[in-house]
Amino acid sequence: MILEYIAIIVALFFAMNIGASGTAASMGAPYGAGAIRSKRLALLLVAITAFLGAVLGGGEVVKTIGKGIIPMDLLDAKIVIIILVGATLTLFLANIIGIPLSTSEVTVGSIVGVGAAFQAIYSESLLYIVSFWVIIPIASFMITYVLGYLIKLAENRWSELTENGRWTKWLSVLLVFGGCLEAFSAGMNNVANSIGPIVGAGMISSSNGLLLGALFTSIGAILLGGKVLETNGKKITKLSLLQGSAVSFTGGTLVIIASVFGVPIPLTQVTTCGILGVGAVKDGFAIMQKDVIKRIGMVWLVSPLASLMVSYLLIHLFIDPNFYQVLVTISTLIVGIGTIGLSKIVKKETRVFVDKGAGI
Image 1 (cartoon, rainbow, N blue to C red):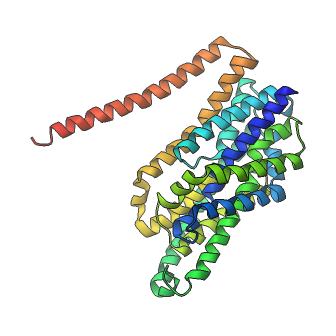
Image 2 (cartoon, one colour; image 1 turned 90 degrees about the vertical axis):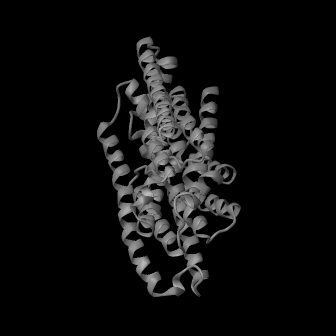
Image 3 (tube, rainbow, N blue to C red; image 1 turned 120 degrees about the vertical axis):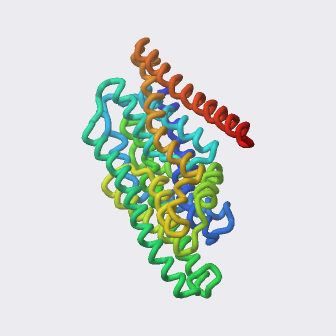
């Protein structure tokens, strides 16, 4: 019983980090475009609409997270704690440095790590989910690129559609509504990542789990979402009101469609790719060279693998002790960290060499 309470506590802490990462990023476009100038108001709107999304439409994704990736009979209190710890640690570290990380990726990665340890993964379901991780963000980029091009033509022809035009007030309202739609979709899709494992283990009902998860997700958005909001809203590219609306409505619609079919989608990838789509029209494809884009891309790639390795390691440490598996996992982690450190040293030495030779 104590372990079950611990699992629920960890799940709710994870829900707070989901609020900080996934749902806070959904209001990045309105905040970046200036439709909402108050960060506190933006996070409050996120909290309210994400709560409604989770309670009203989060059930299908809960089913997928709870029993669609690994067999339900593997899920007990200890396993659930390991799944949630693996996902939460990865997400928490990302929130500390202000990177919009996909909660779906870290959650699925952690679940797959457990399944790999017991050699029990529904591979077809996993491939189905991962394929959506690729297709939906690409679709978001392509749609917003086309919309961005049309918006550019419209703004050049009708100046009243620009920031200081007579339609500014109504365009701001439209963009805020789009941000709320995206936050609603975030709650609908992402809250399941935190409470899906405890629902799958039978520790709490789906309805009660969604209610608690939604509440703590909203709290997390308000308390921890500021850095991610700044990253998505201000550090990628500045959006006009119409461009921001294109991002929000595209992202929100795609994620809601995925949620109806029970597919956990990386909302932050969908949103950021949408921002890149309109940004590529506005600033050219050189926007892809920005350091923040490279950093986000690396975290997207590493995050599911990191949570997978953490949960896999914890299984072989505490549930099914296996010295050889622990040795290989730790060695892999050391090699990965060491390679990154060595790469930084080499780049630093190269810069020093080039600088010293600059005057020759």
